[in-house]
Length: 114
Ligand SMILES: Cc1cc2nc3c(=O)[nH]c(=O)nc-3n(C[C@H](O)[C@H](O)[C@H](O)COP(=O)(O)O)c2cc1C
Image 1 (cartoon, rainbow, N blue to C red):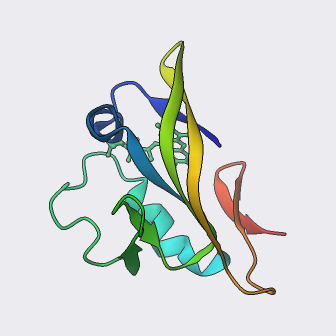
Image 2: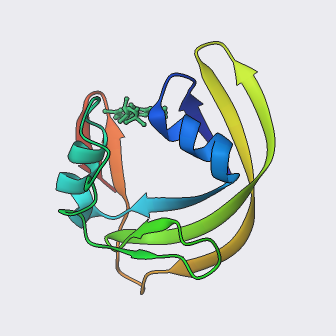
């Protein structure tokens, strides 16, 4: 899997330290969590207190409950790309939601559904 992380993000600092991370592909019910977790400057401590989540069995990374799929990854490669870093992860574990759970999209500044 790959994600593009802003080089100045606190998340990037954390991933540099742990070399493992959780990836949650959000479902339509996750709009409040998406908006909250995309808020720059939110407090790091207890930022997940209002977000239903569990800890991944392989890495202990936070995985959001309102997801179509969750994955645990270990950093395999990093490619600097302008303001961002393309982070490539080897998948250590994956969990899928039941059929019928649909992904949350973001398009032209608004949330959308398939
Ligand atoms: C729709 C949307 C998409 C975003 N996509 C990314 C992204 O791909 N990579 C990224 O690093 N930040 C992205 N951001 C910004 C981060 O959510 C936000 O800056 C982040 O919470 C700040 O990082 P930090 O809290 O780890 O410092 C996005 C924000 C929004 C609203």
